[in-house]
Image (cartoon, rainbow, N blue to C red; front, side, top):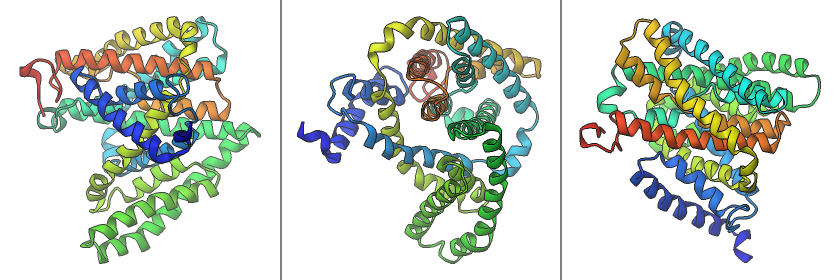
Length: 390
């Protein structure tokens, strides 16, 4: 059809459809990300085929991941990292090990290859930053103890995800795996040093001189992100790793909060396309072969994540009600699981069937977990009036 060659027509379908399904998701007390993925399934090549070649969309959506990692780095102050190297670190590492064992064991029992089972276990280690924070009322919990625990755990999980992305990239080069990983481990500190020097002696001076010109700061922030991301690829790393380093090196700047707020709409624009492209790549005709393991994995995540987090937090001295609430708010798979799955397929670490299994499991946990949270805890979209908090 003529329209499929038109990027304008594709953008019309994506954002008009996203607005409609996001509205439906909010009325259904769901995170909007669920609507974006379902829209991709509906309009993609395995659905109505209105956008039957999503490769261009996927290329554009990768920019959203770059900005996501950039903003994650901007939020990660070095002093915050030191503060987290205590209770939250121990809880996150122990829970990640438990979830990995559960995921690996389940994948292996269902007959998936060892590498596929390894990745299934890996993606179950992470909880959703989008659901965990979007359903967290800023006026009630964000600046209190419960919110601090959730944010600390999510940040440490995100750091683990960065390491996983780095390892998958080394695997994808197809040469000597250990040598490739070693080269990346050497390249990483060099990239950090270069970024730090550029930030200290050039970027900060430009920001200080022209900080009143907001349009220039916005432009400079994007150029810094994309520049370090491109430098990372030249050094054998990935755009995503480079963007994360760009954010971390700029996190201590007094202008970091301004940059974060200004770039969030741009990030969200591209992330909508990213989640749409994930849905568009999902082959609905494989559901028959993966529905049982997907349901089992989703059930294990929904049931065991709250229990494990609650027990670990309670053992660390947290109150029972706080431990239980944190457990339920972290009781789902993650959008990072989807990102890792995309890179794992590209690197040849797993096949399409396992990718579809992880996507379906993640989507199921998003839906079920969102309902559990909004029915029981304060959120901006809670069902009961007494639980609705901005």
